[in-house]
Amino acid sequence: MSGKIKIGLTGGIGSGKSTVADFLRKKGIKVFDADKLAKELMTSDEELKLELIKEFGEKTFSGGELNREYLANTIFVNPAKVEKINSIVHPAVKNKLTFLMNRELEKSNLVAAEAALIFESDMTEMFDYIWVVTADEEIRIKRVMERSGLSREEIIKRMENQIPEKEKISRADFVFYNNDSIEKLEENVSFMLSIIQKI
Image 1: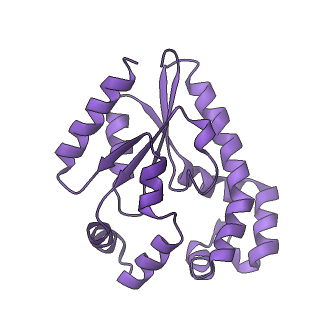
Image 2: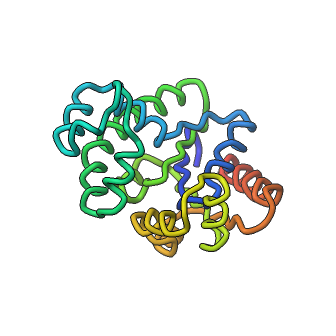
Image 3: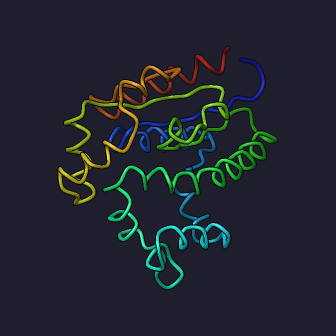
């Protein structure tokens, strides 16, 4: 593909997509974090804040900050509420992300965005390539337990609110299996980068 390239980077919880994002940054590629962007917009966009309070109650914010614990406990137990918050937040994130990526491509040829919910939020059309990072479920659960303090049950509940791994893999342009070392993962990412930059 000649000209400008947009990579969408996704993967389930504990897959290692953030590791791939960090590696791309080390390579000098600008990577936007859609989940971080969503959190920023939820506290800075007044219209969005009002919509969230209307839907999920006054406890959604505490001292002007997003009450993440309350939201997680309220939303992740109910797939309908996950869908609702996504329908409120995703359009704003998509607009902002499109603007930021296009601005970056004025000065570079390749940009990426890390987003957990690329498929769930219909973001696929925004990108030239979708990269999926995956790993065996038990490995993913162990990684998240080690870094977050969440229980096995809580992690599984969050996994159930994401599109199944098999579907992600089937819809990806490239898949990185992250069951081995970080070095192996980085080697595979470097190889794929070299290929798409030559296309």
